[in-house]
Length: 275
Image (cartoon, rainbow, N blue to C red):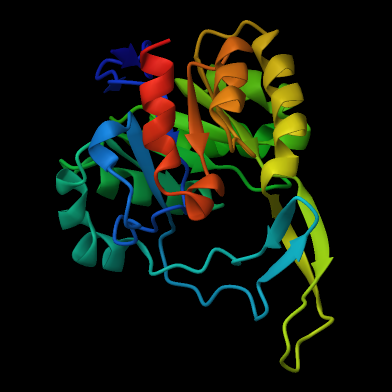
């Protein structure tokens, strides 16, 4: 057993260090065939914001060598609809559920956190920091949650500023750091419709992102902060999961690899727990 919120009154105990990142199974309704959630340590669902939003215009995905660029624009149903339609799924998923929240205003974030805190199916929250977050905004957003919500909080850091923002998040009473949000990228859409050739700019995902993520993880680990570290980004093999854990992560989140091989997280659990 691993406690992924060791400095929190509630704790967040998982059976193993293999988790799913936000966005991989939606709000819990998009579990692919071949994935057994009961074998995993936990799953992050969401992101969730206060009000519904349309999201980015099409096209949203473009392939590149070793990965792809994705821009959803945080398309969202909003907290009310999420709780109404999907919260009932969370206790049935078979592992602890962490909900990712992504509002950028402290006041609305506090309201979202409070609503989720009242739901018995939620074990913790993960704050997706804005990509342009500075020290003050980071502090304000984290405190908005920790002062209005009883659940343990992880903060998902922008990879390119993880070292600078990590201490701020922990000082504001987050119990864990997720390293990290993917770097930005751009690629030309290769579809056959009228949008062919359009440039998609957004999050860079896929195997090529593992190396920069690992470098960021090592840099944050050297800070020796009193928190758990969770690695995510480009982890597509058992060996990469092992490398991230050896570099200081207490757990890893699998993202784009799940869409390639839904059975891979289960194989990772088997390999790492028997190691």
